[in-house]
Image (cartoon, rainbow, N blue to C red; front, side, top):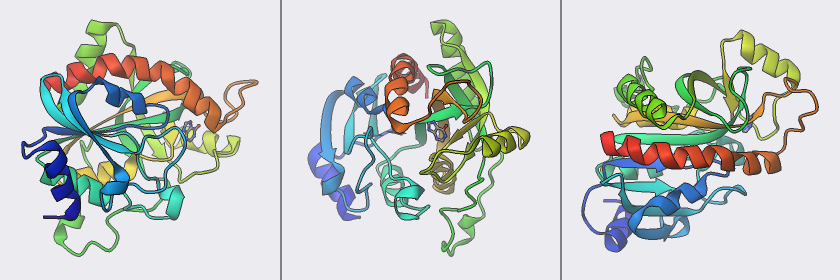
Length: 265
Ligand code: HPA
């Protein structure tokens, strides 16, 4: 058992969790939804995200949501922070060891679909690993050869669409293209991403999806759209400040959607 697992069990008890939820830029207060919760700073958990990016939380929260015990990481570590695509591996391994069967990922992203605007959600159906880095490089077991067909669990996606329709939350599917960041894309890169078949661009998530599938978890991911891709909307100034502000609109929808989905997993 790792040190982090021991610390989590010491604070939050021995009971298993059913799912893990990772919160993206500007979305960290979704963690406030948990009841009977225990909050543990990442600092106390070896291998959990270190450093940090503004707009992200720095805690693990274990508690109840939608009638289930889950763990929420209020922030993540990105490839662009230290050049480590596997930065989230220890934390995700800990989630699996604590019993999680489902990994739920959220992020802020730029939309390439004219019908999906800032403030909207996009349910991810697939990704393009354009950053080209893979968190499993260096893994020696045959488990490294992860099948990525239906990596974004079709059953969970179908349930999400049912819930979205019931709650009147517009939810279009989309393919997420992972750019390393931290600079935003050039308009030319956005045009390329559109031609490659992407519907959203962002700087996270794809490596966590690969790790989640490697660990045998069902994966679900949803983007909170904070802006249109660079050059797509006249007069739009893309910035991290805008990302954090606009994410709040998506966060309000995710706060309704996620508990209902957790109830059904
Ligand atoms: N590009 C990359 N990452 C992002 C964006 C974007 O336009 N918006 C929010 N995160």
